[in-house]
Amino acid sequence: MKPQLVTFLIKCPDQKGIIATLTNFFFKEGFNIISSQQYTNSIDRTFFMRIRLTSDVSVHLSKSELEQRFSVLSETYQISWQVDYGRKKQNVAIMVSHTSHNLYDLLHRYKEGKLNCVVKMVVGNHLKLKPVAEMFGVPFYHKPIGDKTKEQQEKEVTELFDAEGIDLVVMARYMQILSKEFVHHFKNRIINIHHSFLPAFQGANPYKRAYERGVKLIGATAHYATEDLDEGPIIEQGVERVSHESSPTSLKNIGADIETLVLAKAVNCHLNNQIIIDGNKAIVFPEAGE
Image 1: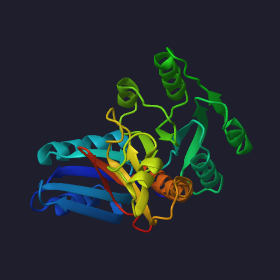
Image 2: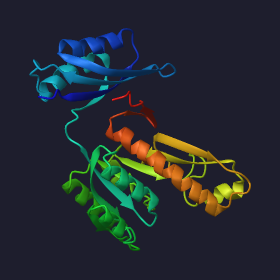
Image 3: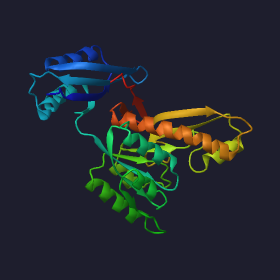
Image 4: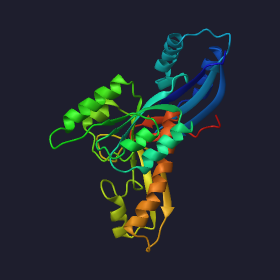
């Protein structure tokens, strides 16, 4: 039987001997540590750890027993934590409007096995990208928004996602501002791609505004969605050098390539349990060669 992979994400006040305490706990419980990554914010005196474990074949510890025993330790050391057992792929929903490049890229990566998830559906407030979803064999749901129907539309989308067990929502240029209620329902489970290097050019038409400002770098930012527009914890960013000769159209074309890479990396980081949220910052651990 293949050993089970377990990932713990840990945050606590920094304190002497915390690494030894944590690794010793897992050793005594019969786990083999296959990777351990840690970071200490010396300004805030906060410790972060991502630790990946496999269980010894002789270990018969249930999930509830492991979590109960770790809870005792967490109370002593003021640890905030979450654990993933690695056997269930996360269910993903992609939300879109008109723009197709991020959707194409994500679905291509998914079909090639480069995204460790199950893309359960694509949801669009327009029908334009339905053929793209169908081309990849992914169900498409049309959820239009009229002048007075946004609240009802979000209610329908929330019910759909809950019914299908959606773990992660990806806004692949879904050009709608989400309500506070929707964001809170899927807290830290919505990733948005913004087509600028935040915090520059928040909101609409960033490429046009970048052209007007005469920037020498353009970029893209993937972040968790919060009720404050384009203010959520940043997961990944990318940039490309441009010049005074760049037009709004050429900036948009260059930016599209950056967006796809940035969004895909951010989604993978979330799916691989590489992220710890700390206030309005995302602590993102590298893949560690797993």
